[in-house]
Amino acid sequence: MDERPVNEKVAWFPRFAFGPASNPMLRHPWILGGVASAALLGMMTASAIVLRTEPGGSPEPVRTVIERLALPAVTLVDSGAAEFLHEERVQRSDTLSSLFSRLGINDPKALAFISHDQNASIIARQLRPGKTVTATADHEGQLVSLFFPVNGKDSMLVVERGKDGFTASERMMHLSTRIHVNSGEIVSSLFGATDEVGIPDAIASQLADIFGSDIDFYRDLRKGDRFAVVFETLTYHGQYFRSGRILAAEFVNDHKTYQAYWFETENGKGGYYTSDGKSLRKTFLRSPLEFSRVTSGFSNSRLHPILQTIRAHKGIDYGAPTGTPIRAVADGIVEFSGQQNGYGNVIVLKHQGSYSTAYGHMNGFAPGVRKGVRVSQGDTIGFVGQTGLATGPHLHYEFRVNGQQINPETVALPDTAHLEGAQLAHFREATGPSRSSLDLARQTRILASVE
Image (tube, rainbow, N blue to C red; front, side, top):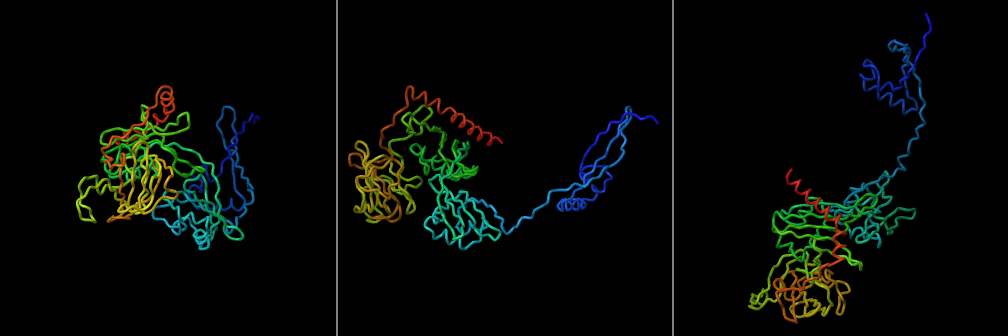
């Protein structure tokens, strides 16, 4: 027979993965376990079929080559030295013990340290829902390290186990900013609607602050009111750390649309403006409490609940739990801080021109708030209580012009300035991306309602 040129092609494959239908490894899956076990013992079988092709002819299998391949030695890990990483979000009902349980930590000494150490005890005081807490523990559930975000700071409280026990220290973090768009619809309350679509409570509070001069979020909300918002969140290694600032927002209340855009002027001062450049920072807030209910309005004749006599009620009473923060409705100077007759603990603020405001029945004053101190709009000046002639915890609020009490719901208040000229042009250019993002948030809500 004449010798002819031969072409060889080698096709490599693991025998257990590919092969003829008659291969018993494909019909008996349990054999795969044997192959895997062999691999773990440092040996694995590979095979190849050498195909010999003659010119003008069809491929003809000639032989099968089987070779045992040595694998690198496997080093077993001592599980006793292993550390396990856990991450949990703080829930509304959490205590330090319940959080430890979900983190897989069973360590009474660590729990006692965090509860009593001066630095570490901040964790128990700042268990706010939504915070992400990270911890490492050994195979017995003993705490190795714990990382906890500190309120109001770009820092993390770190608790670590050492040879001499636990230590707690605060470390600065390098945070990244993410921009989110979201929207929702009011069914019962603002916080209920924001919770439904996953908007953080801090952003919901900002939303109420931004539109608080135009919308009373306790009395003015209607079922079917809509909102869209563009906001920042700050992350640490990809994990949520805290909420940032609202960049743009829209609220449709009782078929009337309100919009707000964050903008910093050339002098470095930032604020919220309408789409045409009008500042949303009113001279006076509509209410000294973020969320409350009016229990008694302004009246020239009212039956006093304690004195049982008909007398004028020259203010507005806001019902709220004891300890609720009270805000200064405008920039001003503390004119009086102390006790005064039926007002109980009261603060009087002097504002620009002839305006002043009074806040009575307070449980206590905010730190540093005393006569002569300057406060800014929105600053906490005290806390709701029932001192003086009060039947329950509430705030008695008065708005005064030249010392005379005026109904704050009907008085004409001074307006704020508008952006003009080059500054208005800069505003429109700077807020362009926020406007586009707000459009996207609005369209997302529309598409969701159609679906």
